[in-house]
Image (cartoon, rainbow, N blue to C red; front, side):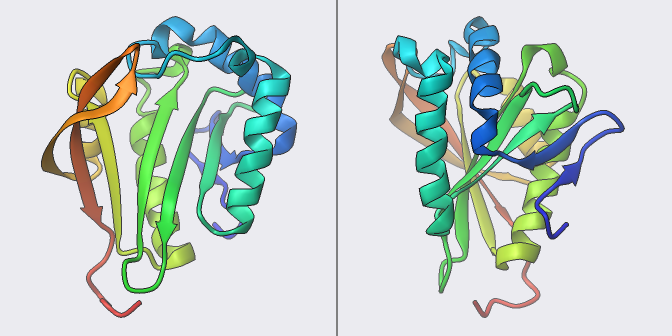
Length: 187
């Protein structure tokens, strides 16, 4: 697992996102506009373009080089993007913590890919950075994502009021965490 690639199913691989994914990522976000609208902020038009995604991926590369973020894409080997999973706010030292967010293409929902990806990235984060804890949040109405987190061993922390500005309004979020290991509490 040193490359960061995680085999989810026979036909889907989770692999690190690359600058060359900009066009496919723009198509994926455009294809999933309705599917993601309830959970995402209102996006500017250039978000759905190759240029807009290339700019976002350039920033990702800088943040990745600084060790603050890692982002994967769901890949079926056809050059398209079918969702992503992000570990952000990666903190080493005494905290050994990160935040996780993900989405799966409407075409692949219900196949267990989010569960496999979350579990795979938790294992990878423990092996790669010795992370102790990962946090995740979901919109209170996103029961499917809450089920994924529960299946993956995340425990609910509680409710965060007016947490994110999504779909044109401030929305509450349920917050979760997972302890990855207790074998060594030393960073």
